[in-house]
Image (cartoon, rainbow, N blue to C red; front, side):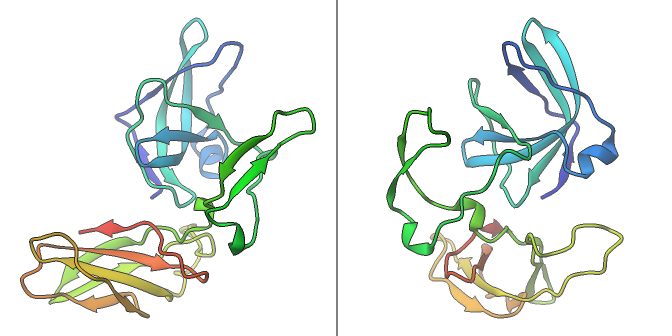
Amino acid sequence: MGRWDRANALDVYCPGGEFASLPEDRVLSGSNAALLETATGWECVQFERADLIAPDTWRLTRLLRGQRGSVPGDAAIGARLVMLDAAVARARLGGEAYGAELVWQARADDIPQTAMFEDRAGLPWPVTHLRVQDGQLSWTRRGSDVPESWAMPEAENVGRFAVAFDMGAGFGAQTVVEAPFADWVEGANAARVAEIGPDGRTGFWTVI
């Protein structure tokens, strides 16, 4: 989403760890990034200010939420925070590995762990600017291949999207469109849209 959150803060207990405040331009360039464990999954957040408020406890403020295609969510007390740097790499496996129980070992001296590979980082990003006007539902595509800089031109808004409407009993069957708009269904209470990736998986839903 790339939205500044100036109201909330993260209090992080990190024995022996240190955090640093950075100017806004450094944050916008990708610094001070972390993965936050939330009720809806892992959210990529960034922060501008870091203040030591108690022994081994830091308060992170001026947060930049929903980065790298993640979905903002609520974090409970005790949630994990993983700082990101150049040493963190995304696992790249073929589609046949989706849903399979795999054995993971980061280093030779680490204890192997079994986990299911979902490749959530490979899912399409949520669409944005979802709106209804003159009987038409429209939106804007987002993604790692879409420029986010204000200095760059608007990216071509193409792709395949799943669209579903709620007529009062929950969202019904979805339809697939190959343009960033669809006719609004008369009598609908809500609509949701998600991009469909090249591998056929549906990304995160955006609701209006």
